[in-house]
Image (cartoon, rainbow, N blue to C red; front, side, top):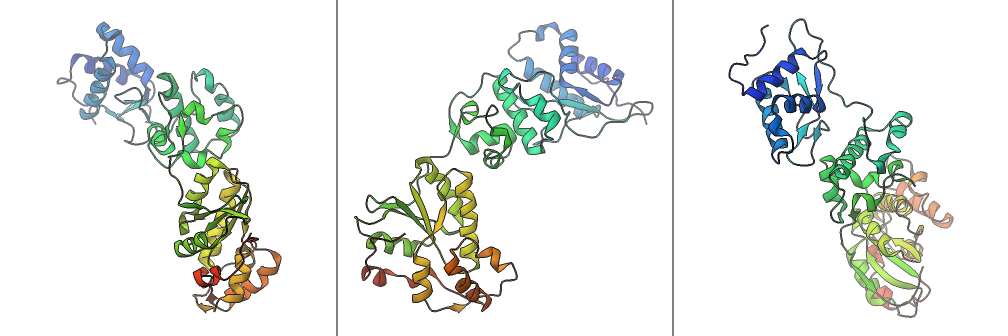
Length: 353
């Protein structure tokens, strides 16, 4: 196998090709390319377009088959400032040279920003996941260009730091955001200013979250202004987690939930309980409306459930677990709409919980 031809390369690319060819390993880091480029072309020093010119040379070398660039969209790119530069290039293998190493990131950084001085110990001792490492690299790049210029929604910052708009959200509740590590202020992030669909009904301490929109509307119309429930919120079915995260911005005193008595409704409630705890809300408690639903509703057929019924019903209070478990074992369900507007308007709801 012969080396790729270099006769058609620009002078700067030809010089870097020589450096790449003489390297002891198959992977050449960006700082080596930087140093070689500045030695070969002193006009790069302080030039506004120096980064763009180096990117063009890297692309030229890749097109000539001399190097392979990191995977697009992966963590092998220094994305800020623009244009993005590869953190390394991999020499195309040739006889007599050291084989190209696996395409993995190094486990340490040579110089972390002062606000990230805890990172080397974290990398050494706590075995970061690829997602955590990608975020740390993104934050390093953000701080290197002066930090966040504005406070933006989490998803917008996430895509800039990691390439994935959904990656940052789950990490906010993890070990990277323990005291003395990353903070929302450092990243310049906030939750998107979305407000759940809610109705203020009085001054009571309880915020009641309701799975389905019809029951939410009927409860909002029927609840008195002098009762225990002060606000009724539509839980938006499977989107309950999003609703609870929005409620965390103005923490209610107490939080209760009412949904369907079926597999789907109980799974939503169980996930909601975990979300409420994770975002610092009060415990998500079952509403007393569930007992009323068991008395009022007529069970309808449902598909069989092969999971652990005891685990599924564990969120409910002791007095309801047995009857609800029997409901599920009989392959039936109760929709919350059995507690409808007509029933609500005929009932004293001042002590609803």
